Image 1 (cartoon, helix red, strand yellow):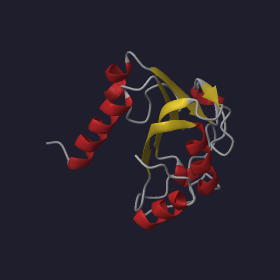
Image 2 (cartoon, rainbow, N blue to C red):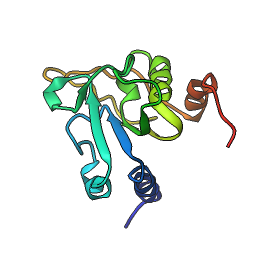
Image 3 (cartoon, rainbow, N blue to C red):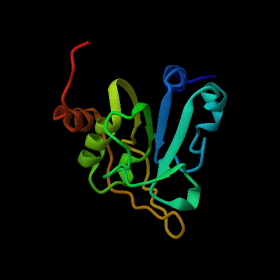
Image 4 (cartoon, helix red, strand yellow):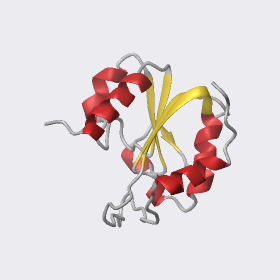
Length: 148
């Protein structure tokens, strides 16, 4: 039995996979963190991963607070279960917006009640935040919006 959120995620990934350049921010290795299910969708897409740690062999090693890409250089971004681990999610959202082309797509998945899940040792990261609708609206409220 498929849950509504699984169907929603699949539909989002189908749309994102139609874009030319897709960046999976915090994705670690290619098609990690539940993305393996969607790998075939991205066969004709320039799909890249970015992670802060080279331990996962991402395509791009970088910090979400200062993404090492040019403005408006990415057609779509996938950012799944990352913002809870960053020190400043406000800066991270600004950076995601900066690299996204006008009309680009952002798939942002964040926890609200998920248990604490920091990691020690290799690939270590802390666990700082939980998000709700109001939090996401606040994070996006200062970004410039364009009319469709």
